[in-house]
Length: 220
Image 1 (cartoon, helix red, strand yellow):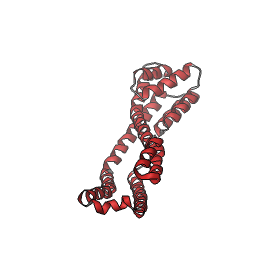
Image 2 (tube, rainbow, N blue to C red):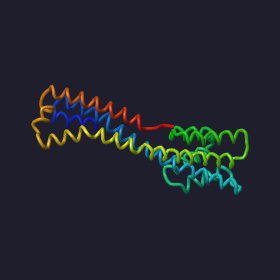
Image 3 (cartoon, one colour):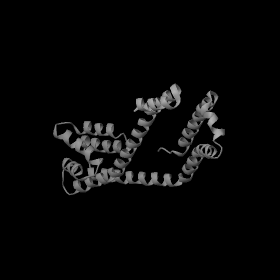
Image 4 (cartoon, one colour):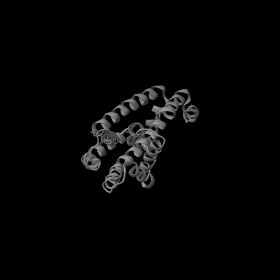
């Protein structure tokens, strides 16, 4: 993809355009797209995990062993929960310890929810205790965390909208100037000094968007 972008940039803007397009195609665009897909998959998994824990709680209370509850989840749950628990069940069938299987799940899904789930299962396996009660409490905690995230998202919606408007405003102004007086804006694309101005503006714009993103993106 980077080579394709570089070829297109070279045809349009020469060597400078080829370098910039190669950077975007080789590093920027694929990493951005992959990051979006990974974040979406992790979000779906985190939302489904509390339901899976409830299945284990009900199964243990009815007398089913933990392994059978895990098989039920791997067979009847939607993706991506199904594939992760299927890998856990397959590993146990081949003799992989539960602790190692949960560690692999955490490597695939590096989420705090998975870490909590792993700790509860491993500690219960080593020390014993009421598994259904421990997992029931964990399910309550996970649902409370989800509610808190949604509340934070709702409260920060206005700040996110403001950041999007501020970030899009220079591009909108540039487009309006291009459609009304193209000669004013084309100097930036036709002159070497204009290229430097565009690079500086893009750098400052990227820095500003990054700072605004950090200000409105709450992690807890």
